[in-house]
Structures are given as structure tokens and as C-alpha cells.
Amino acid sequence: MPLASILRKHHHRIVDEWVLRLHESVSERYGQRPLSELFVTVTRANEANYSVLVDSNYSLIDEHIKWITRIRLEGGFSLSEVQNAYELYRVVLVPIILRHLRGTEQVNTMQKLNECLFYTITRFSNYFQSLHEEQIRAHAGSLEKEVEKRTRELAESESKYRVLVEEISDGYFVNQNGRIVFANQAFCDLHGYTLEEMVGKAYTEIIAPRSLPAVQKLYEKRMAGEDSKDLYIYLRLDKNHNSLPTENKVKRIIYQGEHAVAGICRDITERMATEKRIREAERFAHIGKLTTSLAHEIRNPLCAVKMNSQILLKNAGFDGNDKRRMEIVVNEISRLERILDEMLDFAKPLTLQMKRCSIREILDSCLETMDVRLKAKEISVKRRYARRRLPRLLLDPEKIEQAVINILINSIDALSTGGRIEISARPVRGNRDYLAVEITDTGPGISAEDLRYVFDPFFSSKKKGTGLGLANVKKIMEAHGGRVGVSSKKPTGTLVSLTLPVKEEIV
Image 1 (cartoon, rainbow, N blue to C red):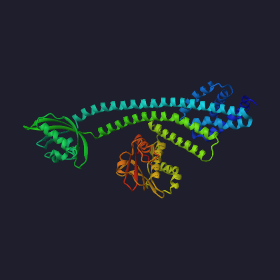
Image 2 (cartoon, helix red, strand yellow):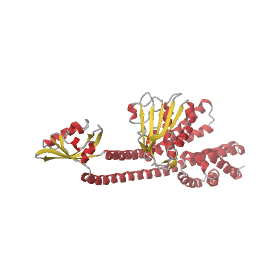
Image 3 (tube, rainbow, N blue to C red):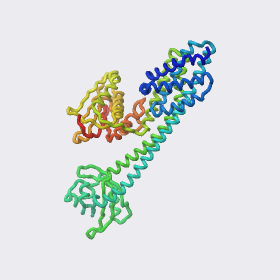
Image 4 (cartoon, rainbow, N blue to C red):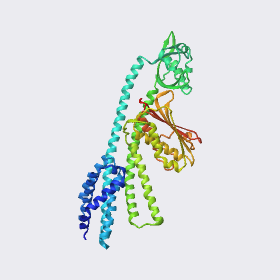
């Protein structure tokens, strides 16, 4: 029987089996799609494949690729999911070919099928990557514009703030012969002293040791009439011995008949924190662009290697050690694809789907998800939740689960068999506007040197780590208006704390 007749005869069987396998075995996303939609997309794909196998006409397959790519990208499908969907055509058709064709005709048809799928998956992958790159570039451009906007707003805000503070709440002082002889209330408040305590105090007592040599040098040069900076930043020392960043603008004057230095100082703690956040946003924008470029450059050849490895594994008759080696190749390529997906996820802007949630339920769900890995290493888990009812938080549960699971994975990887994890949730002591989640393990801990870099993208002490786990945790927490901290001492274990804002609703 000619191939065309075979394909026409089994048209409905091919479509039905393809749809069934697609709906049940490829991925959760395909399982959630309506069967009516899958019948439409699969029928068009089957007709396009028929055109290639029977008439060597690729025009229908090209049209199908352009059509299905946009649909699947908008639906959030990954490249590998759709590649696997196309591969199901081989799974469905090969038994039919083997049953109805023999000899040279069978071999030629199998060759046509391989060529058809190789062309389809390659063209689809290239088109998918091209459209995906356009989306990423659009996201990167949007992020750059947002950074520029916030930088401009910061500059405008800073200008208004400078005028306002210099007129109203800056600290004014006069330093004469090394002592404060005049100060306004704002200057006293900045340092935590009363006016009586401040007047007559040596200026060296309110400057942090780290900044003292430089400030003394500037003061001596100005008193000597030499050129020196009018505006400088230093660390002031308050009554509680806290070192705080301060901007000081000074001028040599005559005060009560003698030379002195008058100054206007103000606290710049918030400004420096804001500038740090902007620098970090710019750094992440750059990392995102670089990551996206590298990921796509790697993915294209990786897809080709994986596809051909899978074809070889299915059709080349490998057995024994040779088959195992090929399976290892395919598995390792899949692991690399997951790493690339993590890199691309990290590069994308974070969008939150906020709703009221129980943090206790989220933590329990995370522990249930990790149950198999915990049992495999005989790790015990102790839950310590506040006795009082915890507030329901306004957050994105999927993102918070992702953050907690990333931390749990790190703990499990660090622990030896029989280790222990403790997870707690309670209002922050002294500030009930925040809720703290703490995850502690009894692992080997993190060195003081590594502790400084744990939130840096791509920093990892694990052999197969991507270095994006804690970086993503930090990104998620900051998007929620919260924060994350890590404390650790070798070899006593590690504590990771997540602090989330509370918008009151006790349930």
C-alpha cells in the first residue's frame, strides 16, 4: 500500500493518539490545555507532515511553525515542551510504518520521517529562539528605561531634599579651637546629645575613628587658610557609638572675633542606600542582558546535540554500556537546559501575583514538596511556629515557595545523613509590622569569606550549583518589600532569615 494511502487511512488514529499522549505525558501545561485546542493544533501539524512525507512540500510545515510558535510563547511553554510535542509524531507513526511497509520502502519512509522531524524541530527552535529573544530584549529595554527614570527621579528628589533640609533641618555648628562652640538642635539630634552636652565638646569625639585622620587634616588646612574641600563625606560618631555616613559643608569664618570653621551637616544614610540599590539595579540589568545572550548562544547548539543524541539512542540499537553512556549524555544535556532556564528566569523582570496567604501553609507545602529528598538523607525537621495565630500576608505564594525551596535545597545539599533542619515563623520581636521566617540547619556552615558573596549571582560553593538560588531569593524578597539575611559559623550550621511586611489581617 502506498504511503499516502496508509497516512490517509490512519489519519484519525494518528491525530487521536497524538492528542492523547500530548495531553497526558508531555507536561503539566499541555495537560491543562483544552482537548479541543489540541485537536486543532495536532490536526494542522499532521496535515503539514503529510505534505512533507508524501509531496516533499515544506510550505505547510513552515506556516504551522510560525502559527504554533506564537501561541505557545504566549502560553508560557518552554522550547523543550514543544520539541517533545513534535517528537510524539515519530512515536505514533513508527509502529504504523513498521506494520504496513517492508524492505526498501520501509527504510526510505523512516528516512523521510527523520528528515521531516529534523527540519521541523530545527526550524521551530530557531524561530522560537528568535521570538523569545525579541521578548527578552523588550524586557531589558523596559528595565533600562525604568533605571533611567528612577535615577532621574532620584536626582530631582535629591535637589528638592537638599534645599528643604538646608533650610530647615540640617545640623549647623561652629568649630573653634577644636571644640564645638555653637550647634543647633538638629546637629545635636544627629549625634544624640542635648545642647548642653554638645557645646564645649571636642569635635574629635563625634567623628568615627575611621574618618578622624582625614577630617583632622581638612580642618587644619582650612584653619591655616590653605585650599581644601568645602564638601566632604565622613562617618560621624553618635552617643551610642554608631558610625553613620554624613555629608559636611564647611567654611572658614570669624566667630566672636576669632577664626573658626562653620559647617552644615546632614545624614546621608538613606541616600547612600538608594544609590547602592540603583547601582545594583544597573548591575542586574547588565547581568540580565549578558545572561540572555550567553544562554541563547549556548542553547541552539545544545538543542541540536540533544535531538541527535535522542535519535541515535532510539534508532541506533545501542545496548549495555554504550546505551548507558548515551543516556548520560541526554540527561546531562537536560541538566544544562534546566540551568539555562534558571539563567533566563533570573534575567526576566519579576511580576508578582499578590493575594492573602497563610505563611504556615506555605512552609508546610514546601516541606511536603521536599519530603522525598529529606527522607533520602534521613534529615529530621522541626517546625516552630508562633503559638498565637499568625497574620495572613499579602504576597505571591508561588514566588515565596520558590524562595523557601531554594533555601531548603541548599540546606539538604549541605547536610550529611541524619542532619537536622529547624524552620520557624513568628512576628519580629519589637516590630510586629514584620514577620520573620528562619530556616536553620546543622550543616558545616559557610566560611566568613564566602558569606560576603552568597547573594551574588553565579557565586556557588557547590560543584553543580548555578549560583542563582540565593540571588533569586534576594530578588523575590526585595520585590515583596522584605529582606533576607544569612548568618553562619563553621562548623555549626547556617541560619537564613526571611523578613516579610505584615498588612494586618489575623486569621
